[in-house]
Image 1 (tube, protein in one colour):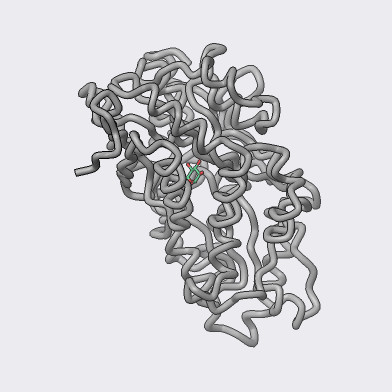
Image 2 (cartoon, helix red, strand yellow):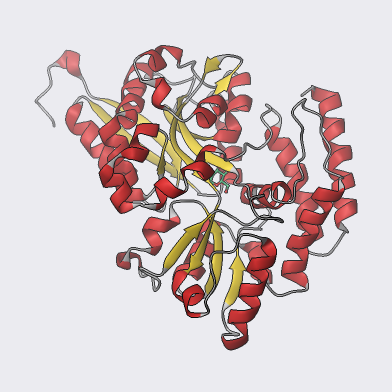
Length: 406
Ligand code: GLC
């Protein structure tokens, strides 16, 4: 038994709940935390990486007022819903002790519900295009600026390399599908939800965007059909095995694909760029990212606040980003020489990160996402037309708003 503590300094164990993180970079920070606070132990509780599955698991536990969750990593899209349900502690007091004006504004906004901060941004995400720099160089191509450029590059390279996949992404029926689809929609000038909160997907731009995606998969053989069952990790593995020319994924892939210890076959041959658009410059990235909050049912809010503060410290966030390749939420880190040496694209792509676009911000987002996932996946499988899918989405989302409000 540990005898270094007096009885009043008993050890408190808090749980840190997060989805499985392929980078594993949080463990070193937790170790440091436990050294700094010897009377607090952190038990890491990992759920599956699939954001939709995680959401449903947490909803069940919160609905049962489960007190075993202390600190929780929250996807940007859950915060309005969980805050409105009363499942998260307000963290404005914690924010007073942090340099909040150093944090990226998009994620901070996503953590705010009704003018109250319910989580602190931990790392952010934006959809990016990874490509095989060696192959593009060999064939004399620059990074594609448009979807048409991408198609030409794939067709040309595959003529000599028919075994290669062209472009892979995530199109299983889960949250990642919506991230990918929104990027197609925005990069064709479409949207689902305008500034005034008016919902409408059945527009020519959105129809064209999804049709392009479907043609890439079903007609043009640019995207293999396998993507209909891929999440982030399946697609990363195919790319880093050297079996695809292009990959759409989040920033964490850079560090893993360039690290020989992960078994990557493409170390040093990876390029990274903004996703293409229908026209040059019309590119878009979905805003993702994870934020640390505290369960309203936690018995250890003070210790939980300490852990969150620790993760947000400049040096700890720096270490986390250096080891895991995650995008930091503190803007000053994008000027840090060590970070820029390890991830030079942080400087070039800062504009993409800061302009990443949020999915609809509403406490009903999960239901909206489910409606979109089901109908779009059916269209991708060829079971219904794009038009039919969009009309169904609009009818179901409007019925939802009528029942519950926005
Ligand atoms: C990433 C993003 C998150 C998104 C998820 C979808 O984890 O950070 O926001 O919902 O991918 O798979």
